[in-house]
Length: 115
View 1 (cartoon, one colour):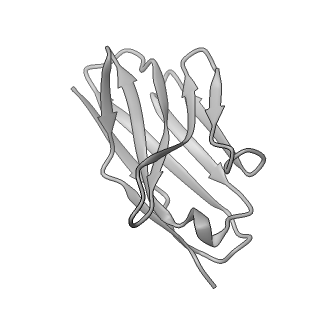
View 2 (view 1 turned 90 degrees about the vertical axis):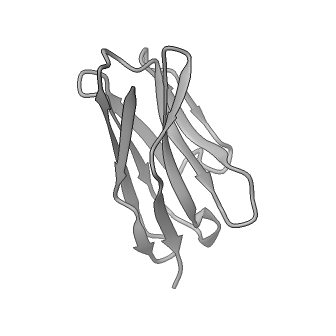
């Protein structure tokens, strides 16, 4: 069993920055892939960014050039640095982990971009 706990959401003005963090706990060695999804009201959950244990990354087109994902395999943590935030980035952001062929999710953290 894997537990994922996010932190770092909040309210930010357009053009601002936020850093999301997620820590995994449980009887785990290393998580294969970790990342971030988001879900805005009335929309489906979508991938924002992910990173494998080997360092391969995947970004949504909307995140490229603005967001940077990083992780610490030894600590099983993943971070998302979000810069140049836009109102359309407003959503609940979920930490995700792929461990032993199961998907695990955090509880979500709200990110609101508004003036």
